[in-house]
Amino acid sequence: MQRIPCVLMRGGTSKGPVFLAWDLPVAIAERDELLLNLMGSGHELEIDGIGGGSPQTSKVAIVSPSLHPDADVDYLFVQVMVSQRRVDTAPNCGNMLCAVGPFAIEQGLVKPSGDLTRVRIRNLNTGTFVNSEVQTPEGKVRYEGDTAIDGVPGTAAPVQLTFLDAAGSKTGKLFPTGQPQDLIDGIPVTCIDMAMPMVIVQASQLGKRGDESPAELDADKAFLQRLESLRLKAGLAMGLGDVSDKVIPKPVLVSPAKSGGTVQVRYFMPHNCHRALAITGSIGLATACVTEDSVVAQLLGIVSEPRLQQVRIEHPSGGIDVVLSYTGEKGETIRASVVRTARRLFSGYVYATASQRLAG
Image 1: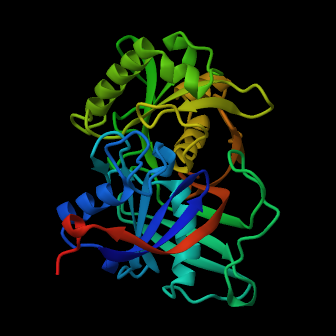
Image 2 (image 1 turned 45 degrees about the vertical axis):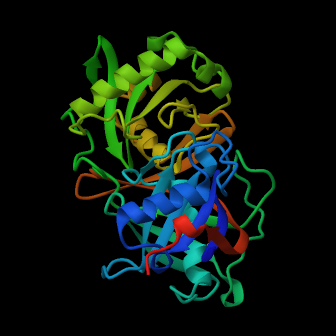
C-alpha cells in the first residue's frame, strides 16, 4: 500500500481531508479516481474510506502555493459524492475554505504575521478571491477560542472570511438571466450567482412552510422531484447547460424568519437538504436580501434604501450572520464577510491499495 500525507480538518459545518496538491496525481482523472477510493465513495456509509457518509463530510480540499500576485495559496474544492462514484469540482465550498488558512500556515505555505495572519486565497473552482484572517498568537495557529457557530458543538477560535469578488463566480453575472426575478413553470424564482449559483424560491410556492426539518423534506420524494425539475430548468436559464450531473445551481427555499433573524432558509446540495447552510450559499442569500425585486427582498418587504449592513440567515441548526459592505461609486459592489471556526482533527497518512497507487 502507498501512503499519502493527509490532514483531516473540520471547516465550519463541514469536514474532510486536506491535501497538498503535489501529494496527489497531476492527471485529473487519476486524481479523482484516487479520491473516490480514499473516501469510500459508492457506498452510503463510505465504509471502506475516510468519508463520513454525508455530503457535509465527504469533501476534499487541495491546497498549493499560488502563482497569482493577489493570492498566497490556491484552493481546489472537490465534492465527493457518497452513493455515486462521482466527484464535482464546479462549486466552491466556504465551510472547507475556512480550514485552508490554518492549514496553509501550519504547512509552511504562509508565514505567520503577528497575532492575526491574513491568508489570501484563490479558489480554483470559481477563480474568485477570499481573505482569511487566522488567529496566530506567538506565530502559531490557535484553534481554541470562545466563538460558537450553529451546527458545531462547543467553541473555537474565529476565522473571518471576506469574499472579495464573488459576483458571477461561475456564469460571469450576478443575475445570469439578466434580471433578479424570473418565472419558471409559473413560479417566481431568483437565479443568482454570488459565490454559489443558486435558484431561490419562496417555500410557500412549493407547498412548504419553510421550517420543515431536513429529514422531513428529504422524505418527500414528490417534492424533491418537483424541486429538481425547477433546478434543471433554472440551470438552462442561467447558461449552465444540462445540470443533471452537476451540483449547481443549488435550490433554496426561503420563508419568514422565526427566531429574530432576517430570513429562514432550507438549502439543498442539491438533492438533500443541508443540516445547516453552506457559507457560499449564505453570501448569495444575503446579497439577494438587499437586491430590490428578488424573491427574497419581496418576501422581506425590502424595496429601497437603506440597505442592510448585516443579515442573519436562519437554518435548521441555528443561524449564520453575514456582514455586508458596499463599494464602488454607487455602492454597486457588494462584499460579504462571515466568521466561522475550524479545527485540525488529525494529521498523518491515508492509504491507497495497489490498484489505487499514484503514478510513478
